[in-house]
Length: 316
Figure 1 (cartoon, helix red, strand yellow):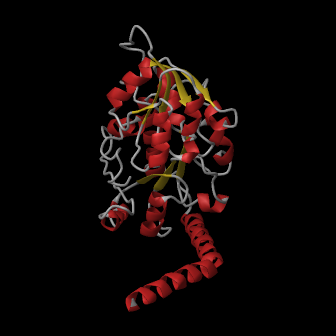
Figure 2 (cartoon, rainbow, N blue to C red):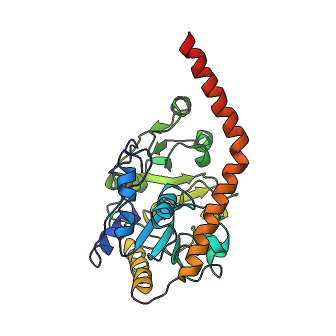
Figure 3 (cartoon, rainbow, N blue to C red):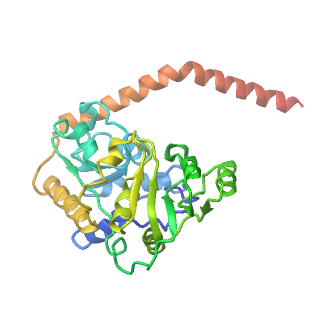
């Protein structure tokens, strides 16, 4: 996570609660390798020092890339906690991880049977997200939780009637979008603590999650349900639909699945073979190289234009 984010150091959720529980059994070190942070390269060099590397990342996102660079397809035990809905790469590329953790029943079809060790693991912090201390009346008609990003389709909240509230990390949100939503009578609250978030869920009649398939929303659905709110999604999102009737997992459930899987890899020998792991790493590097070659003409053109502009400016 970039340090400039409004959620930096405040982003508590079911994962952080699960890690808190996991720390009772194993020593943990959290490493932030977001390239916008000034200590990213220093932190990347720490990755090989772990006995097991748990990467929380979407496929080929910053943490996954940093781990590939640090481990170079070596034999270090490593697992990917898939934080996103991007479909997996080729099966051979998936083998650079000893274990894959996925979040939703919908995603199961893309990893089960295609990777030797795939585990559904997800959960919420049920110490906060529950039916305790409910208000006498729910006074928020529609609550939307998350970033004001295009893939979350926040403009659909304008079509709803009643008291509408949006909250989340708005640090990268379009100024015009924020103005447009506010002019439509929507209350924008920005980032709040997890305790405060639970209180908003308990005040909400409907938690509105209009995200695209690749737009997240998984956590909001489970948290809203745990707090007794109704959930409304869009009909084009089978991933979120798969969570509407799922038994709500707690952070304890989440932690136990992660812990048992890690121990199966480290102590039980449930590993991808060193040869397959190396082949998987090389397949990723080949794909990245081919992509760079494909984009080379446009890259040269852009850099040439920028160079020409700098030369012009130097003579003005």
